[in-house]
Amino acid sequence: MSILSNSTSALLSFQRALQTISHNVANANTPGFSRQRVELSNRAGAPSGNGFAGAGVQVDTIRRLQDSFAVGRLLVSGAELGRLADLSLLSNRVDAAFTDPGTSITASWSRFFDSAQAISVDPSSTSAREAYLASAETLAARFRYLDGQLDSLEIETNQRIQTAAEDVTRLAAEVGRLNQEIVRNQAAAGGQPPNDLLDQRDLTISRLNELIGVTTVAQDDGSLNVFTSGGQALVVGNRSLTLTTVQDPFQPQRVNVALQFVGGTSVLPDSALGGRLGGLTDFRRDVLDPTNRSLGQLATTVAFLVNEANAQGVDLYGNPGNPIFNQPAISPLAGLNNTGTATLSASIANIGGIAENDIELNFDGVSWTARDPATSQPLPISGTGTALDPFIVNGVALVLGGGAANAGDSFLVRPTAGAAGLLTVAMTDPRQVAAAAPVQVSANVANIGNSVPQLSVVDRNDPGLGLPIDIVFVDPNNYTVNGGPPIPWVPGDVIAVNGWELRLDPPPETGDTFSVRATQANSGDNTNARALAQVDDALRLFGGTGSLNTTLREMVSAVGASAQSAQFSLDAQSAINDQLVQDRESVSGVNLDEEASNMLKFQQAYQAAAKMIGTADTVFQSLLAAVQR
Image 1 (cartoon, rainbow, N blue to C red):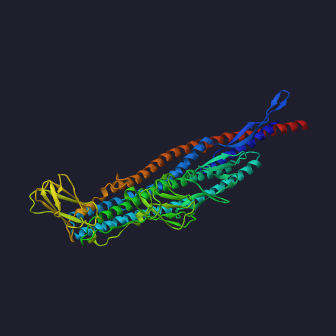
Image 2 (image 1 turned 135 degrees about the horizontal axis):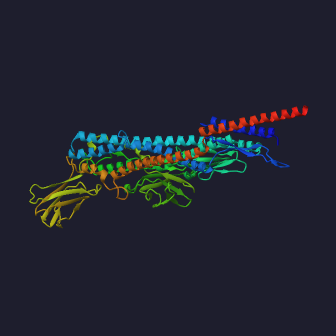
């Protein structure tokens, strides 16, 4: 080969290297850009009588510098970072609503039960009774406010899911288009990679991954197939699927993520969703729904137990206590795909058995079964579903009505979800607060002994509860009721009559008399006011193991723990992701110092090649001059 040929190949190769360096420098701050490097190799030499003469240099390819393992790790990290970002953001919003002094339920809760205690101190006080009803209004309003906050987050979550689904569809279509461009350009270039298109595709996949979490599979033609975390195809070659949202079969206001096909849609399970969509569904499933149910359970049970306690006493009119709160109703939801005409009604059967779990009732054409829709685990069910023998599931009575059910029909019963938004105060007259017990006991002033009577009502519905009763001890071990035959008694025994129980301590003396009478109007008795003040500590929930106070504390604690856990995880994942970005940049990022060094190196080589061409021209001119002589 000639000096001119070798020098020309060098000049062109070094020119390409300088072009590549300038391209790197120009894109030093371009998102997703991977620096490129010209790969040079020597041309095969030609044989001559005294060996092989060099043939110069050639450009084999322009290689994109990338670590596939670093890119893969960054994809996994990016999806998790996207998931935790939305999960943490929304969880912190819930926590703020429950812990902010201006919106927290805790202060209103304490004031309500403190005001009941104030009535027990002065049962005849109108101002104390008015304060009690005012605190009840404040408590109910706080429940409704928090329920409204959760409803707003439900709406926002739906909107975020819909927006993310639209973005996924757009980005998936862009990946399909880039696949097509890459395949076409690579084929036209004889298999050489179109580096900038590859960068664009990687950046698009990275953004797609942040939204839904994806995996990729490289194809022989240079295209990439993209799949969700659950293995569902999003992009195959140049074709992409549409991600959409569909109504929940039981809750039309809620949207679920689905893939759209020619023949319909397929709802994606939560396990198939990563990235921000996964964070949104995780928030809804693990934070929003449990908090909604817990808040509703608290509203349902406080209304039930306070109303129950007030019903045990009598008010200043001498009447049995009326409900203080309107009990939130349970409204079963029929499945959107039901074909039968059966209806379902629900009510509280056992307040201690009410659980936070939702109940899904399914009919297979023969019998009804119950399950927890969150876990798909079966729930115990008894009864036949009639008004006389209702289904009993988790403390809820379920009665079928309307027409017949068809196989596949189902109902969703949410005993507590949304109940907080329905809590209102029923009582408006402060004199109707039942501070007094329905019956009262008095010791005759002529009694010889020092016995202190303690009366408690055990059956408010006993028809003889208010009848006058006189108990006379004919001797220390026998007493009579309204002059009847003697009844044996030993210290510690309970005297039970007409739905009430009487305890006497210390033991009475012969002739001691105790009278039980119905409470009259304007009574100053505070027995039932004390019971109202103690409702929050009574072990009436979860089969007698939990109280309203413990339930409130656990709910607020659970909300805070969820927010804190999500934030800690987000902080840790951010640190991991930052390190992985640095790992990628160490290979693919543009180092301007290195590019400047390479520029000088190839610039000098380019100048040397140019001089060699000048030398070749001088030699050639000398040869021509010699021939011409």
